[in-house]
Image (cartoon, rainbow, N blue to C red):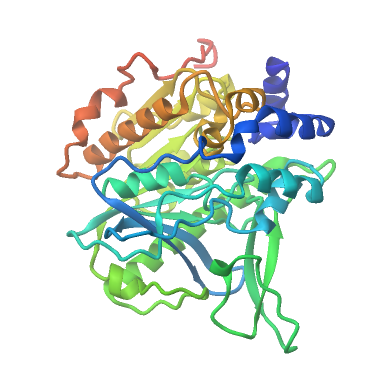
Length: 437
């Protein structure tokens, strides 16, 4: 069955969250029986292992669909009883996941709320920033059907190691759900999200939800995905421009109600000579598009990249180092060949594959589902997800030290960049026919 599913994915060049192929009539049984431990504290997103405690906050600049929306993770000061934000910010995101997976909203909201409603991100909400020199910056791009909070394990770990991480929520209709605001001319009819952290500062704004846009019957997929990846890159670049403004002392207005003073915290605290772009799947394609468009990104880490959305004509324009970190079960010949087209004798290109991993070994779902349901829905691979996370985080940090010219001790993991570990494969596990090369 898995081979049939993979062949179908590859034939249609899809970037699926692997939940989508389970028949709808199986969902209730899958969730209620297969993840019985999901309602307690045994399943959680792992905290960062670095020397810094981690805080997070949301920033929306510009209230319209053309504005910028992101979650910031950053080193913070210790505090007693910090408030930890919900992993899924409000129920509209559950609805978006249900639509993306073609589930009934009412039923899925109960299921998702039971399984994930109490899950927290291990980062202190609006915590006081920790001044400690200048921190390098990472922009993170999520995958198809995801949103800004679903890769919090990766983002928290990087922040704990001394990075400021901006996880962008894309508004190209590739996120399962996102929102923006429009001006409301009729008093008393305002509608706001079902969570406190997403309320606007202005009383005359009401939220508008944007959900994932599926392909229309008979629609050619490439024009849509290519347009989306270009918009995604533009959104990442705008997010970086906002961080430049904040760092330089320029006032930036947050559309969301927030007790966090961005200017006071982040002014002159970012090392904007050391900027990286990182993303998963569709976000991996966004990494490559960003590197082509903006040389301020000094290097990129692409996690299990879906290459289909990219126009190969841009490949010669990518002159920064790229690190492809792949799962063992997702990749296929055509996708790897496209990655190999970025190979260069001048610019560093690295690739490793993590044994026992699946495409969903990178988002947080892998930590929040029990073994039975995780394996059934391809949210977990054969490897312990904590071991996998540790491997690609350490390899990423070593890569950043090398190509951001950082004076840290991450080079202790340099061997991982070359796949030197029992759980790693140098390059790819996919056999590429000589004729294709």
